[in-house]
Length: 187
Image: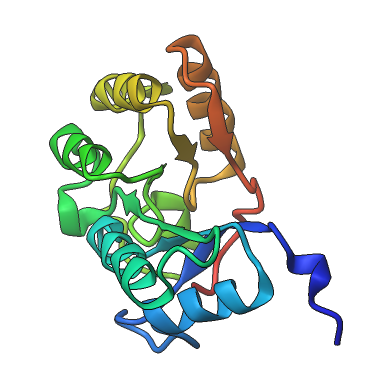
């Protein structure tokens, strides 16, 4: 198979090991695969919090082992699920200062995801209250804007996505990633 079509590709959303469920690759295996096919970058994601430190280690490994012989970069992200306190501007700021490039809104702890998976919504991370985005999102939007990174809508419902995207745009966020396919998820 000709892999030239992958040259310079950027994958914005890959789950790797370690994880609470088995994934096909660990961070280093994915990095090496990306280098082999000539990818430009990969953003690694976890539902358990942040992958920023893991991306740093991959990039350092790439520097040492490959000695700058490629143009590949691994990027980390932060996911605002219950494990890191939900909508937590302090965790976001820390992750972005350490090099994170994507901030994901709740995934497995989003109300929409939990409903679709027939799980209790008692502890979900709500992003809409009384028809409006929760106030904590203002600080997150400001950080995303200031660091000029991507805001991903996670596993929110389409209606939640539309409201959050509108609020984020009004706050000056320029880079948004929203699959708006969130009728359910197997992740």
